[in-house]
Amino acid sequence: MIKKIVLIFFLVFFSGTSAVSAQDLKMKLAVMGAGTPVYLWWGHIGLIIENASTGQSRFYDWGIFSFNSDNFIGNFISGRLLYSCGVSRTEYSLEAYRRINRSIKIYTLDVPQETIIKVLNFAENNVLPENCDYYYHLFNDNCSTRIRDIIDLATDGQFSARFKNEASAFTLRDNVRRRTWFSPAADWFLNFLMGQNVDGPVTVWEDMFAPAEVGKNIEDFYYTDIYGARRKLVASSEIVFESKGRPAVLDAPRVQWPYQLAAGILSALIFCFFFFLQSKKIKAGKVLAGLSVSISGLVFGICGALLYFLAVFTDHDYTYNNANMIFATPLLLATVPLGISYFTAKNHFKYLKYNLLIRIIWLLCAIGIFISMLLKLLPFFYQDNLPDQLLMLPIALVFSLNPFGLKEVLDKFFPRLSQRVLPRGKTE
Image 1 (spheres, rainbow, N blue to C red):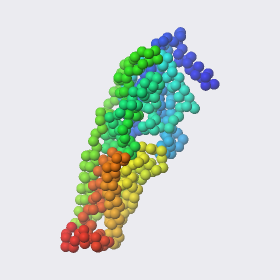
Image 2: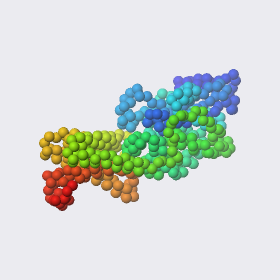
Image 3: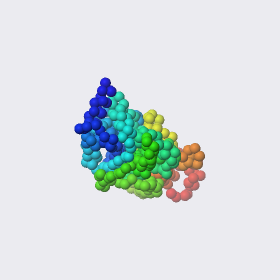
Image 4: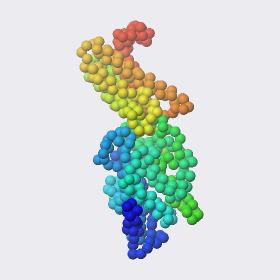
């Protein structure tokens, strides 16, 4: 049955008024720029096969998924999201990208007709229902790596032979940050979730998880075709649509830690001011101090809880071996009710108890940050997580060691320690 379907397809696709000539088929790649949702920030790529004799053009797309598919949320969370390969009319697909303001660049490839037919057979086999689904992976298996492998098929392994041995100037994290720099919150959060597995040296071949990298690396690539002739892979390229208002992909990742440190220090100064107001018996200061503890604990606690879940219970392997788990722990969520109890407590002893517990939890966070920094000295463990550390460290230090009320807490629960750290007679 499958053979009959393939035969019918070839009769339709290659049919014209006469037999197809040796120059009727063209193989192209379409590289699309980023879209608006986060999951479209990496861009997209598709394979185009044109039949000049019949005027037909087919667009093969390995980036198809549906929010309405069975158990989409569960598969997405677990890291086993099904993607599919589909085929459509090229003009219909490209117009869809134009409508949502995504740039489009077309590369026409110089490959023999026999090679295009081989690629066409491969693509048509991929769109069959029994072959079209695969498990998506951001770095290892996506629309871009599938096209990269097709180029390798068309060049008889010469594409991989060249780029699998060429060291990249960037890590996988660097390539992510080149595309997330314009959104500080998303950039911090996405990189917070990624562990040291994305910080090691990689090859240009691995860079091509991003569609734009495929386009860049095929432009000046030469190969020897099936007849032994030396060819430039890209015969021509054309920008058919230029998006408007989209952030550019940086040539190199921006250094992020100064921005995160500045944000951390600014937040810490604001929170410290709240505690200062409280020390002056201003009621709003106590409320704001407690809320700052609760909100910070909620934000970083959720981030930590999600990281623990992804790293321990899912197949999102790029979150594994993550030193952020040392300091951004789900324990921070405990400061949410503690912060509320801190400013609502009527009993002074309970207020001091909540104060102590808040300080202990955030002190553990600060200690964890210092430990994670020391881990960078180990030759076998390095994670580019300085922005994560420097955002949280000033905040953790303010909540754990701010001097406003510290002596009273130590006098109540640790009198001996209080005498050593804050001798009697010394004012706060």
